[in-house]
Amino acid sequence: MDYAYDDQNIFAKILRGEIPNKTVFENDHALAFHDIQPQAAVHVLVIPKGPYMSLDHFARDASATEQAGFFHAVAAVCDLMQLDEGFRGISNTRVHGVQDVPHYHMHILGGQQLGRMLLD
Ligand code: 5GP
Image (cartoon, rainbow, N blue to C red):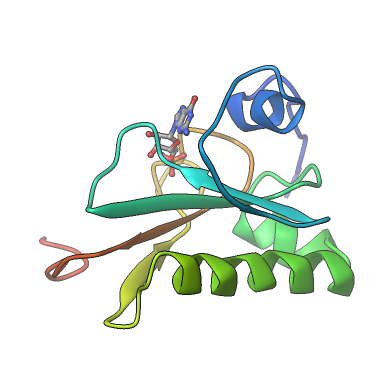
């Protein structure tokens, strides 16, 4: 698998401050912000600050410190957005997963009943 990271993707631009975002949480290794086109009452994206394209790339090549920082941010979002009743974490990946932005991100969706994961 060739993980050739394109630093012109929209989330890389957000990380460089070239595009504004509505930040929910930030630490040394991750940024969480509201999705520009929310698909649920709560729709937050959590991204690592490092140049990783996808969940499998991040799982394979990110350091333990980067991974811990990322998951700490996921937990912080759940607390801040009061997702005690549950949520869905989604990481669309490449073509079959219909990933539009080639910088690893986890969608955190919640704040309402979401229904079944896949309809067909
Ligand atoms: P994907 O299809 O790659 O899993 O999801 C990409 C997500 O990024 C989409 O839900 C889309 O609405 C969101 N998105 C795309 N461009 C921007 C942007 O400029 N700002 C924010 N906050 N979200 C964006």
